[in-house]
Length: 589
Image (cartoon, rainbow, N blue to C red; front, side):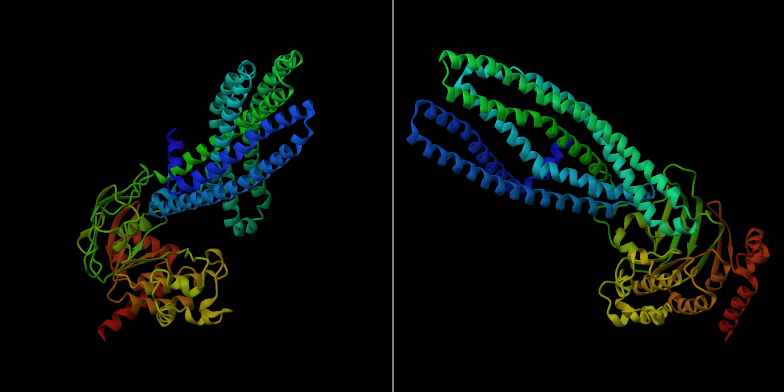
């Protein structure tokens, strides 16, 4: 019932439209209830031979039918508008809440699962709130009005006719209890199917590259089979209970034909009254039969509502404290004090890390894959909170300042740069929406991206495909670097930002980055050591700990682990040494 009440709450802003829809439904129902009485009068007129009375009755019946049709059309239009408005509100709330959730939440979710909640589940809720609710109310009103008129015509016959009613209510209630978990499982299986399809499309390049089309097809077929099996079970429940619910009113019809027919023959009940009574009883059979369908519709909406509220009710792990101040002014000084980081209770990704980086310094983080380099820089932007210890930026604990103000001063360039389905210019200006075209182009030039952008069909207005896949890896990387440069942050984080470009382009980008990094705190996650030439200091990370730090030359001489990394071909140390000597020569000049 709690979920029902919450779903009903979304109707509150549209209560007047909803009441209007219900009023039209009730008015249409009034016309429906009136027609059998008119038919009964017509039958009596025919029996009595009152021909003049037939034409007015026929006209009234036709008029009532036309009016009922008009009221039904208006009711459906109003209900449709309400359902769409509720869907819009719920989708907005769902998406807005997704934006607030922390990365830890998304790390444990499949994209397809989330998309299923925002589409399949939302559609089930919309259909119930917009149409199902009015449908159920209309059917209940039909049962009440028809029963009242039947009692007025002949109380004894009405009592006999309603004998099956308690059994109908019991059967519908039992179906309600059994179908709820079954329909919940159907929604979950549909979400898994959506996730499977989304993953297959997203990874189609890998599928094609490894010729795994058949494998992916079998995986998708298994997901379809799971949906099919669970849907068949739900359908079997409906196929069992719905006919049973529909059969019970037929028992009442049979009893009325037997008892009421005798009363007509005996003259204690007019043929017209019997005809009207019988018509009302048949009219009752439909709503009673549809109780099972209505219950299924409601249960599907509740199952979907539970899945939606599971996300909406989740509290973001990363939030700004009430009244949090903005990040204080500074040059980007970063300090980690005794920091330990665990993801969902797992073994530590970082253990007792102490690191101090002065404002404007460039630090290269070096270590094997999984050492904790990305986790470390993620703490600086408060993408995660440490399990233990403190992270400070310009002397302020990042947990005590406004998250938005902190992240606006940190820019990322990842090794797998993500671009949105938009123009190149829009992607570059993503973090600085008010940037002028001149500023966008200047950032692109500094990232060595301007020349290739101008060669695109529409230049800066060229729209890139989903995830930017219409561009090469190197082109995406340069656009991402331009995006970070335009943001003009205090802290710049480069996660192997030149990994997807050739040596010539890398040298050009590094030249531009040196200018940008000047006076700006920069973390470089170096998967190949050639990028270390840009750093003032190298921090060696392994197993979630800082094992050493110093200049490249100092570490080669004093850190065996660092020397081992260099000697295993992760970088050309000859060229690296040349770059470092070149920087030292420039410094002397």
